[in-house]
Length: 308
Ligand code: NDP
Image 1 (tube, protein in one colour):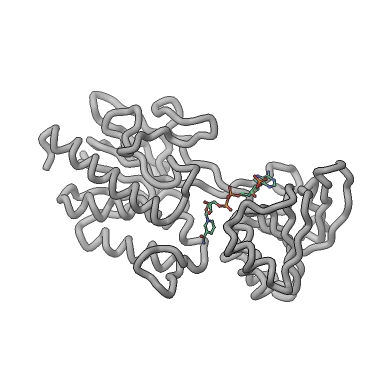
Image 2: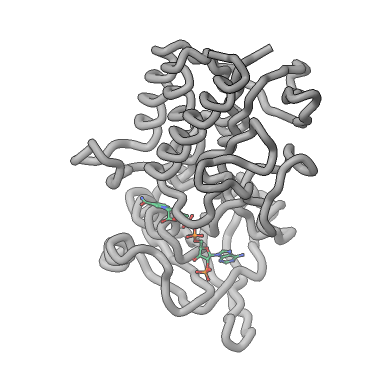
């Protein structure tokens, strides 16, 4: 029986673990399928306080893990398949076969990259279609790639890809980006980056083994045109990882956990932190902040029930 289980080893889960471990709760931190969370897929983080020269995303999360470990957090690599609450205890069934019980639970399972959901994408996944420039960019040395999306991720990925690709084309369904000004400017002034406005991907085309182009659909008039490229990088946002909580917790229409300002959910003893409950800010610093709050509230909840 655990006092506190934290799900997710991203910055939210690791920060919650630092606080809970320092409160002597000996938390168990379960990694999930994307160990380290979204920060492991980014390059430079320039806006996390305390790093005036910036810090690499994977390094930031590793440092936070180390800090959690230092105070007694126990790490486990597995994935929660299902969660139920029985007699004031949470019962977690893991993919690896274990059945765990805990008095309190913090869900910091984050959000995962969104895919387009078209059949040709499925066919060419890993053969030229990807959601991670940091992971796959180097495979596109001197090649031409397209990046789909108009947010900060699309700007960041495009800029990063110019290290390898000979040409990067951002395809965006509108005529302006939602990305922050500084990231837009950085991308737009890069001579290797071009933009195709008002267009979306109708189909990904290839020779059966790898991508060699896309069919673009003009969102203003529906016209279809062919566009040659060797790779397709999707940067079209994220979906929260809450499927395993279906039926036990209150989520919004997009699947994000509804947590109050103190990170409480509608289930007593179950707290949420990070991107799994935040579709507005989604920053490393806000994820860390909410992880801290969730841990402090979990500590209070447990103390009221005699766990110190
Ligand atoms: P966003 O949700 O901000 O942007 C997603 C983009 O994808 C939008 O432009 C959206 O278009 C487009 N899109 C969504 N669905 C589709 C679709 N089916 N087909 C085509 N286009 C689609 O996600 P991001 O991942 O860019 O950013 C998430 C958060 O992370 C933000 O808060 C961002 O600031 C932050 N971030 C910060 C970074 C940094 O500071 N270093 C780096 C990366 C992200 P539309 O605009 O039309 O809705």
